[in-house]
Amino acid sequence: MNWIQLLSLKRFGDKHKRLRCEQDEHRLGFEVDYDRIIFSDSFRSLQDKTQVIPHSKTDFVHTRLTHSLEVSVVARSLGRIVGEQLLKKHPKLVKEGYKMNDFGAIVATAALAHDIGNPPFGHSGEKAIGEYFKNGKGKKFKESLTDKQWQDLIDFEGNANGFRILNKSQKGSEGGLRLSYATLGAFTKYPKESLPKKPSNHIADKKYGVFQSEVSFFNEVAQELGLISSGKEGNMAYKRHPLSYLVEAADDICYTIIDFEDGINLGLIEEEFALEYLIKLVKNTIDSNKYYQLEHKKDRLSYLRALAIGTLINEASKVFLENEEVILKGEYPYSLLDKCNYEAQINDIIKISVEKIYKSREVIEKELAGYKVIANLLNVFITATNNNYENNLTNYDKLIIAILPESLQQPKDTLYLRLLAISGYVASLTDGFALQLYQKLNGK
Image 1 (cartoon, rainbow, N blue to C red):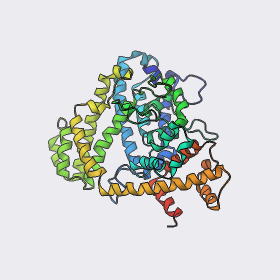
Image 2 (image 1 turned 90 degrees about the vertical axis):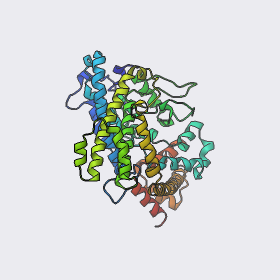
Image 3 (image 1 turned 30 degrees about the vertical axis):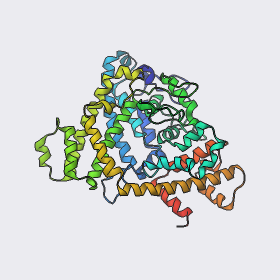
Image 4 (image 1 turned 180 degrees about the vertical axis):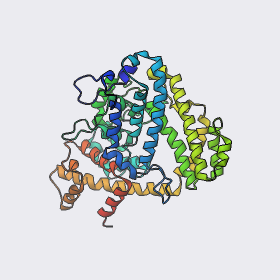
């Protein structure tokens, strides 16, 4: 892979090549991408979606929205640090007009959107949608779908749903948000379809990132960017866009440190016990005098959090630059933090977070409620949508169709697209609105 191709400014529907040297410096194409996401409905809905810990009466807890904004800030720093060094190493990029901030803008935008496809009710939302099809009332559709279409549904993936949201065409709005292909490439951490599922130690094979409905378009994006094909026997798979490693690192840094901070602030993790682990991350940069002058726990945590994030930003960018050539060949199988100097400390923090936060009663109860709410909504909406397609609407179905968005009131032509559209709609709901809909449909 080469950086000139990887930094393509092309957008869906372009007839002419966009050159970096011809860009308006007041409003760069990569910055336009950021703006389009910020003003999108899908991004705005993240304000009422659980990150890990359900909404609390305190003001500490992060939502998907605040998490996404923080990941984007970290990603921007990573992109600029890496971009500065890449411009020195590849002077041709400078001749083409690329600047350090281009890398920051691409990575920040992809990071801003990284959770845009995630369902309500935290990490269990994806599993709840998959469970409906695999073991719930949706399993009756299996025989009517291809293996890959079925896998998309039983292994519903927020990353693939995010790619679909960003690029979903509507009447009069072809190509969705029409983001630059460089940003789409950096966004796609798992550039493959749902099948085949083959065991692999490569980080890009951990999940999948493209539904069957978007395979054709992703192929176009991949070819423009010069991504290396790794699919065999007609299956779609590519090596990662190098900048997706930075997006992933930004997410890893934030959920490692900030989820941990939330747990401490909520009393799920004892402060004294937790500070011991954070200090191990920042022992080389901490100002002990400043730290001990801070009177309140929240201030001490904020100070350590800022230092920890800064430390991991420097580590991740260092690992990326040291391995740039291997990454460009598509042969780097690890996340950046997996091979940094603080791998052991990070793993210790994640282990405590799993035990004390992710498995806390409050989190589990929210996820349990999500399973029931999501299954019920899927069943009601899918039944009405299929009956609508077959011109066999009951009076109840007519009422259900009326409360769906206008874009879903005219059913898709194929069963797969209908099921995916309803699954995507349920995934788009906020925690609060999904619960409200569930209660109304059940007469509560």
